[in-house]
Amino acid sequence: MMRLLPLVLTACVAFPASAATPRSGAKRPARKAAPAKPAPAKAAPAEAPRESAAPAAAGDALDEISLFGLGADLVSQENGLVVSFVRPGSRAEQAGLKAGDQLLRADGAASSRAKVASALRSWTPGTRLPLVVRRGLEVVSLATPAIPPARDYARGDKDLSEHERALAGERSAQAASGGRAVVKAVGPLTVPVRADQGLWVRFPKGLPAGLKKGDEIVAEAATGLTVDASLDFLAVPPGSKLRARVLEAVDDGQARTVRLAFYALDLAGGGTYTTLGHATAVSGDQRMARVGAGGTLVAAAPLPDAKRRALEPVLDADARLRVRLIEPLVIEEPPSYWRAGPGLWVKTVEDGGRRLFEVTHAVAGRSAESAGLKVGDRLDAIGGKPTEKMDFAEAVDRLYGAPGSDVEVSVLRGKSQSHKLKRGLRWAAGKSTPLPPAYNAQ
Image (tube, rainbow, N blue to C red):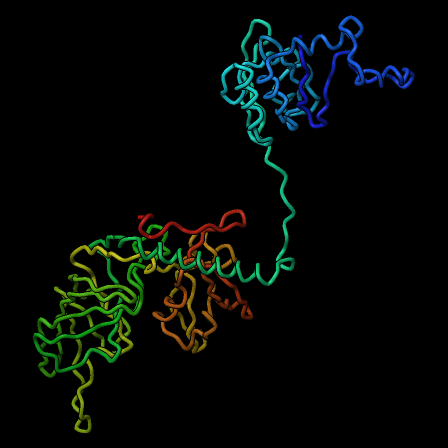
């Protein structure tokens, strides 16, 4: 006793042979007489299976199964559901289902016909459907492949309505605002600076004469300091302030000596940190100044001049003093503080009376290397400004910026060639990925 279930895309239904639709050559009166007056059991043997079918509850549940995407016909028998046909190329065939398999479980449902039917009814084509079948004397586990549903038609920007554009802009602004809120919510991040690190500083108005013990003076970082292993994140950017106290100042008319103790660091764009440092070298001064033991700066006194009203500074504004940290420093700043570069290290050079910046190192995998910049190349413009109008601190400041932003540089190769470089990105196989933050690449 059996009934064939409609479980294929075409929703075909199989009937017993005696109940099939008559051929075109059959007599029409016999076809009309059937609904008018039920025939006796002997005259219509095809009706007998209907009287002995499964209970109505089970039959109703099975009739509701909609497996249009599976591609298998199931027959309801007394011992469960049996596969009668598997459509070639269907998900059922890809899962390994075969005619004659007895379906024990579907999507984890128990072996009762009603529960299996309910599991099949709730299955969505395009998702995996686990099956357990009895095949002869074996119990086999199968699963349909996970096939994603077909994509809807994707519209371009020109197909959007004004309302959709406005909605997209509003949601984009909300997402950007939410991203900034997440960044602000992140606590301070730490980067250690070793005690042997140092940087060059300058005095914007020169190191004045007439200093006395206990006087306070402020220097400005002329170079950046990076402690990141990628050499691309600034821990101390140019323009940061270093505060110093005069420990000793002597002017005997022939030489002037000044000993400074640097005790605080005001980061450009960041906070203030206590530190301890002393001078180790001097460069760019015309008075043959030098730094002696213990960080004492020694400079020749100027020749006496009756017309000179003010004393000349101990160091000119163009001079650079190298300060070395005596104690380690731990910088704690939010992610928004860190600035990255395109992967270039440069130095100042003079060429025909023009100030240029020569590439001394191109960091592997950065946008500068990807653009073809090499050691020895000379930049004559950074960020749209000629290099002859900027000092080293400004050049570094222009090279560095927010990770992912652009900086335009001009390379002098017979004639100037412009390149737009990305800050803080790693390049590989023509694709770019963000650099790990400074605090993750020690």
